[in-house]
Length: 153
Image (cartoon, rainbow, N blue to C red; front, side, top):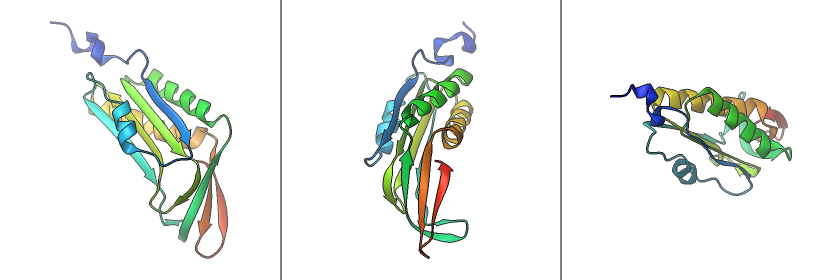
């Protein structure tokens, strides 16, 4: 019997980046989850980022996301880096731009790997790197009438 690490399902898939997008429309958690389905994956980690009603001690009424034209290409670059460093079977990431309300979904990422620990680690790396490296900016509107621009994501 072959070692588990020798089984093709234990390695990264040939083309694991299944879905990358920056969208003005409502995001679908189901779409992202379906995109990462893989029979060789024993774990799927999914992260959903939503608009919260506060930030830094101030009440948030709404916010808007805008991005550089290169944002989607940068998302793919980040995704490919995660794939290179983890045994990813499938990966998907979508981010919303435009005006959002409290409770709206702003970002959905998912990663499928052979084991749960790998999936959690790769998913965490994916969302953290998207937040820090992809040129998406947040314009927060506070209840007291003030506004604030926040760097990437």
